[in-house]
Length: 484
Ligand code: NAI
Image 1 (cartoon, rainbow, N blue to C red):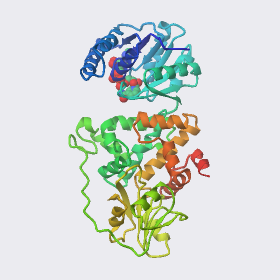
Image 2 (spheres, helix red, strand yellow):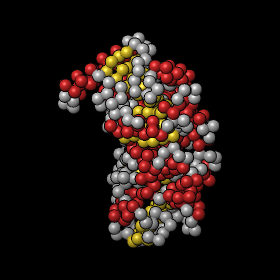
Image 3 (cartoon, helix red, strand yellow):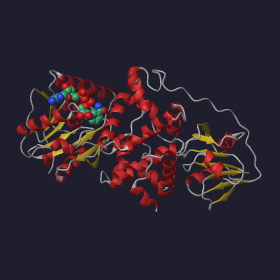
Image 4 (spheres, helix red, strand yellow):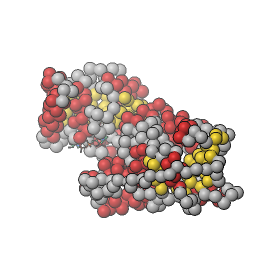
């Protein structure tokens, strides 16, 4: 099956439909666009003409190419025959099912039907169709012309050659397609849940302010912190997705929505679009306080503990320190003070387990070039920041909760990705590509796994699980077996 020269019908001329029509027409396809709202298809084409003019003005497109693209798009007043119909109509199961019944009557028997749904089961949408094998999910991301990812979603009845034809087509449109099975949230919306959920959990526990959570995750390489990102997406939308993934997983507690976000939604504080979310707009997040200068501390005994990239980084910052590669923790020992990378225990837990009465500092997982770094202390440390400054960080104090911010977030993203792979939702490469291209993560979950290691991640989650009880931090069986 080959859709290379397919005539395309886009149904729904809203935000997504207009973008899909643009991308298909730019790739050379003849595209009909239909919307039940009178004038919507024409308006989408008029808006596209403006967008293309803008691209010509910026020198990104020739005037001829813009003209040709526009000429390929035809607003139509009824469903028309096509080789591929892509729907981007309202997110409602019954309305979409009715559309596919109509499409089956209009399209040739060989045609492929695709849905851009982000939350409805493709398997359920295909129920009742004459040819359920011809329905596939083609999940684009907003804005369609810019976002590179397309999740190709196979329902239980989808024919493999139909999914492959759509996969190949997306590739020809300049996208990176990733195969996925029709499961709640598909790849991106599922694996990304902990990015929001862990921030909301920390806020609920009053462990750190939103601007601190955002700053340390940005320092770890994320383009936006979770709080500013939720403000941008809109708490109404983000909360609705979380609720739908929660319900679709039979209320598995690990997907439990947050009272913190519920309250924002109740208040109508949806984020940027309503002028207030976690932050007020247009100001946005308040800047973190500047860190004062410091005097490099001294110690009689200075040892960098542990192996791997973090220990190497610490040693590069303090080359005068001895090295204990055999140690079972990562960090710096300065006389009897331990400054340790989090292993999922709080500073107080570690201090209580030590023989000596001495302070303990735990610091977060430093990813990438991270400077801003969260830390917590066991409470009796006279100058907690000086050694962290000496190690090259900008230390940001938070409440002593297990797993701090970056470490618990990354561990949970890795864990969710393992469940997804084990359950056949996607491949490891697919998970990495989807998270990097669909939500701009600085690395994929399996790349983080390679860096940090399955065993420490599983151990950290086990400690969170012990601390909090409940289902949220249970380790994926696949991660567990990788950690053995
Ligand atoms: P939208 O509200 O901008 O556009 C939907 C359009 O469909 C409207 O113009 C409406 O008049 C039209 N429509 C409704 N029922 C119709 C029918 N029976 N036949 C023909 N046209 C009909 O919505 P948007 O954001 O473009 O979303 C469309 C679909 O794409 C939804 O399924 C949504 O879940 C999905 N999606 C949305 C994303 C987003 O970021 N907005 C991202 C990925 C998927």
